[in-house]
Length: 504
Ligand SMILES: [Zn+2]
Image (cartoon, rainbow, N blue to C red):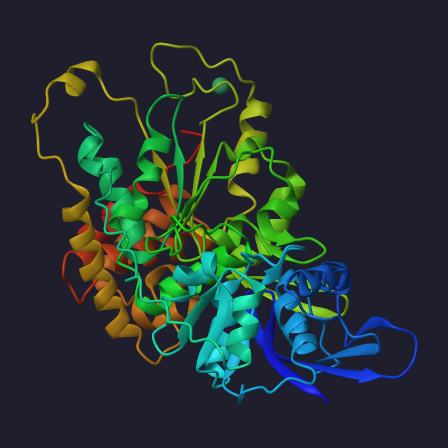
């Protein structure tokens, strides 16, 4: 009399397969769910009974026990409704072989199947477990259909899923071609006029994956320039798109209009955001802004305004590239490899570098502002760049000089990243920005002239060892952009431009 239905549950952004076992016993009528089910699953008893009866099925008068296997792992989500309902409906029915089929879906009282959260990661783990057919809510079909080797069978009513499970209905696999989101970027660096030196600095940051601190007064275009960064980062690979879409799926941010994240994310949380909003968490852990920016750009505008608690919470995850949350003795890991871009005023009043206005900050205020900016992410921010206001004449005189477009910048970035990929193959490093001390020694070798130049800079600018290493990393990227195997003096000279100090 026992039935077994395959499904899956989420753990962070990953899924794992679960089997729903259903059996009848003599005793008090009722539905009993065991196997570390969370509140939503236990609540599903209330939804499933009317839904089954509204489909014209009889709800068993015996005691029904539902066991979720493996019993030792926690399960969560309303998508257990459908497999549990089917397990009950199939008791005593002729059923077809369902070994390679899995079911996901939330059920309404009237038998409608509602969309679920996390369809893509759930589908990925079931595919890995050898499932060939996946029955899921029609609204989630286009999201899961980006997987190539599993049949996606959309259903909108509980009855359709039941008939399919009993072998009396055929469901055609979803074929709606993966919606192409090849929309041209509407934003482009060609729209940023008169800021060619800042654009070059940003391009170097993108090429070597260096964190950037942009400093400048209000209205100089920091946000405008940061927003365009994804337009010059390399295209995502298929696997990267799957990975990022999975994160958005778990966060419940996908829709039928946007079932797939195909471009690098740009996240710009407001400074009032909480630590949990940034790094993720909650009863059923959801990814935060840090993970929503994974493989893209995390832009923190006016870092000085963020709560120090929020900044502290971000520090370690940004360093490690992952968010680690422990809940109910289970570890949940969310990926968080971001390119960090921070924008800030040069001082508290904002006028420090403005010739036409007076800075009213005291020396102490300048000092504390500086500490607040430099402190938290000192290891991840290689570049400090100064963004000036563009003179009016330059804004109107279009074509007064060469103006790089996003496409041109992206070609340069992609070429430099390819150089790094080849150089670091098998070394554990991925790009110049993530080189540690050992990597810097090995890959940023200097000749005699360059060493002397660096020594002079070290003394003259009062560099710390960390500052010294950052300049070497940036010089490595500039050499990669210029197509040179060796770091030369001009590369170092340019790198020295990108360590603007706030005291200037
Ligand atoms: Zn000031």
